[in-house]
Image 1 (cartoon, rainbow, N blue to C red):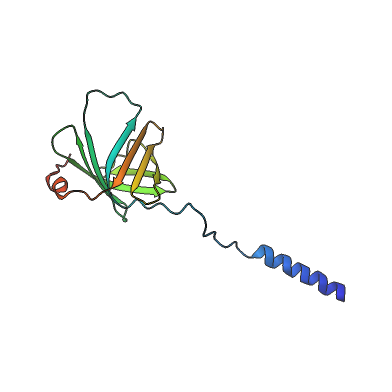
Image 2 (image 1 turned 90 degrees about the vertical axis):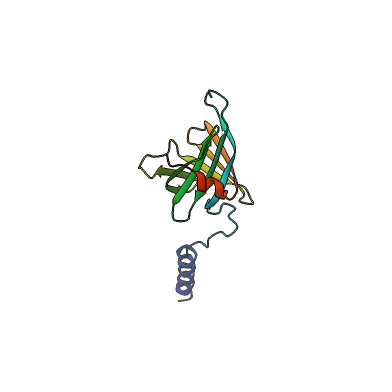
Amino acid sequence: MKRFFSIAALLLLCVIATGCPDKPDDSDPKEKLDITGEWQLTQLTTKAVQVGDQTVDIYVAFTSAGNFDLYQMLGTGRYRHYTGFWTLTGETLTGSYTGGASWASSYTVSLDQGKTQLVLITADGSEVHTYRKQSIPQDVTANAVEP
């Protein structure tokens, strides 16, 4: 009888040890990325051949509802305003414009520790877009033209 209780206790211990779900690891340094907010392009590194010497200025706002507003100026002139939808799955950012056209690439996303610098790398690695957390100036939004 004593042996029966020992075996039963051992089986119960095995069931308890294997039946409980693991506690989430709160020390996991990789937390969910949050890119919502307004950003300004500070650096663009590309392997593509460039023609001319145009300045590129871009502001983008990502909303928590999955929408974006992008203000882009190539060279001189006025900003062009583009809108659409974005999705972040893990570290992969994808999107499409309001008209339905998909972005030219998906991007691998990373944020610095202070969440003030956003880096987007194209899927083929040919471009690296670096943004800083920056409010979009009112004159940019007010004077932008629709494409």
